[in-house]
Image (cartoon, rainbow, N blue to C red):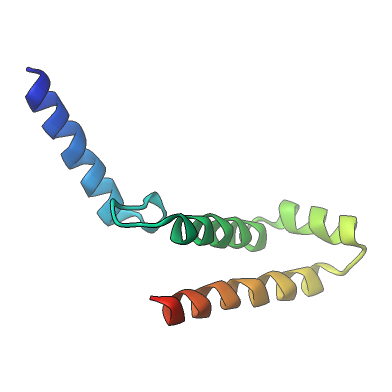
Length: 85
């Protein structure tokens, strides 16, 4: 029973890794994993208005400027990862 449970868990993990980009895979290195975490974080900052307004208040910037800065960082991560791979 334990071998079948292990197979079932591994197949579920492979399914999740194929479905969602940020969950990683066996060949992923530490750098790719860190970039995924940072990219997901910045996307969350841009997508959630309360977080965006918190950062804008903390940095004494307008919300539009913070959104622009975060989008610049996001575009950097996306282009840098495509050049690296």
